[in-house]
Image 1 (cartoon, one colour):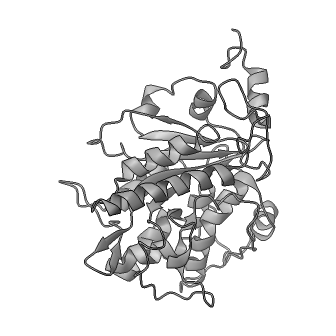
Image 2 (image 1 turned 120 degrees about the horizontal axis):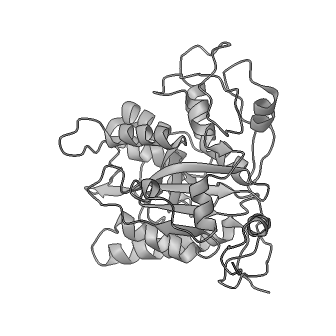
Length: 354
């Protein structure tokens, strides 16, 4: 038996603590941590419970810094997002910023718009992984958003590594300008929490009418694993949509994505640049993409994948109990139901004779 955690909560919590340590040491040396270094510490610490493969995409290529993250359930349902890492930086003495407004040379488009466009090509939602330091680093962060009594967003001890939809960040740039980083941080979800079965999974009530029964049930009832990740990524987007003054009567349907769990989704834009429900939920699939299977089975994904990404992260059995133990595979990767199922169908899987 091994004490390697089977739930993503524990593995990512341990990894986040190591990233917090990296960020603290970097500040102590009068420096700023690198996003690439934080990502490497996060993933190497979470391994082997969180599998990943890093590619050698050129830093000069347009999408070389983007990573695909995939959460996989034991029944094969999965959820993917295209992620770009960003630091929460201190400008001057008190102003905290994230450079969502970054532009590359000879290109007038904001990097955030390019991230959303690239996510369209992968047919997954776009998101940011924010490296935000510890509570001491954020102690002077001023956020004018509404907070629960006695609970400021800067004091969240698990928010050193947090994920947020690119639609939230894009809206923050338009509404808050230089304060967009703080606004996005307020809505960001700690990476260790987004699939945790321990938090409260409150219902989401969209403005759009005429939802299909399966989508309505998904939004209103508690979820686990990849479905929970999708729901937590949607939650702040929906909260923003609920505050927008745009009609949401019965409307047309968004273009379907092959293999998506929900095929009947309203094309409600609100004030977003894309239909927000379809954008966030299109990453929720009924089948695992072939390039993710490549990683699970010890193969390098095809060139068309590796040349366009910084890497791929795979979290298997995302719906596993948070405190369970499991027997370890020979290489140290927990043998969960999904991997066992895959290996039963693959004669040349890692650790098995061809």
